[in-house]
Length: 150
Image 1 (spheres, rainbow, N blue to C red):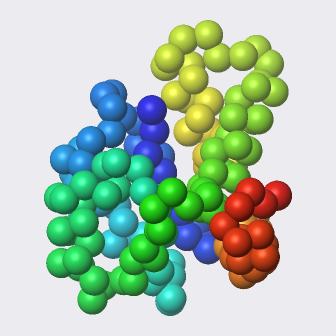
Image 2 (cartoon, rainbow, N blue to C red):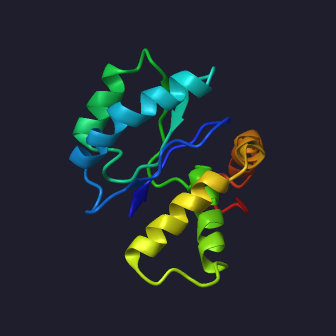
């Protein structure tokens, strides 16, 4: 499993998780990687995540509240469709891995390929995804929270 973060301008680190992501593990990642990326690359400083259990854990929620002056946290409605652009990025990574020749054969090969492909994502791709958010939200409102093409 991996954890990742991106901004309009840049990709943050791709972090390999040896175990399932828990609230405590998530809290060990956020303070080191999120503020730096947001402060260096985002004038708007809006943080988006979904309602995965570790994201909604008490420890993560408390940390986000304590740092609310550093950036705004987009609160995701419960049971809402996934609209986070990171899903598009992960799909692009999966597609790139599937098209590798030869394919990765070991977990270490896969990790190396993922890191390589992560670094190769062009900034314009990120910008296009971020710029798509108004359209994503409009589509979601149009179908009253139902499935969209995003």
